[in-house]
Image (cartoon, rainbow, N blue to C red; front, side, top):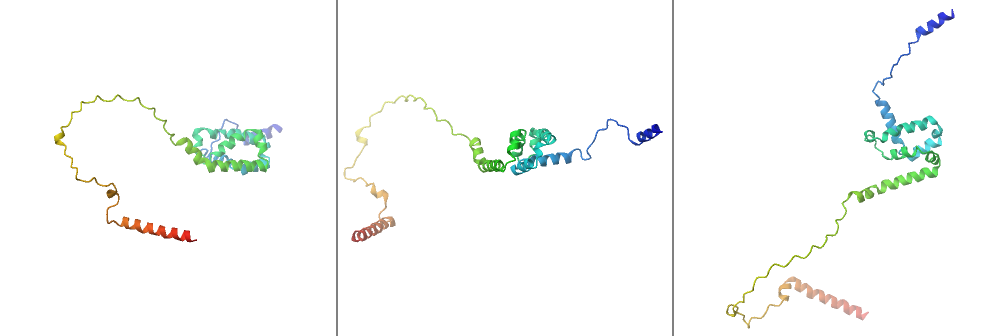
Length: 202
């Protein structure tokens, strides 16, 4: 009779074959959940929360963190919006870092350093992107002077100089006579004289 009940139980259970589990959505849901979790690691407060609730003491969770390192490959990094998560994922492989993140002081330190990185990221990046100044040009060797052609003397009869014409004064070109600029100059100099008289009286 016992053998009859055993045969009934084996008839009810399906035979164990090599059936492969297939996600109904081809792994899309798993991909999105792992992506979301990995990106949460960019937040030091969340890492502190995990450490406070003793997730880092669970060997299965440590194994899961090791498994998630595939996100550092180029074909997956293109989906990540918060690249600091990859840095913290790498740091979480170290037991000392996991233990240190349980303390609030270390959480604040990590958060502050992350802030300073964001604050100065553009300036630091521009230092490496902008072209550097060109090196000083090396002085070229002096070129030899072209051969001089002989100068022919000019006959004295072709040059006429009049001794009666006065040479023009260079000041005539600076301020034309009758311009308003010359009048303003005269007015400003008078104002200065009045100010000087007042200062001397005081």
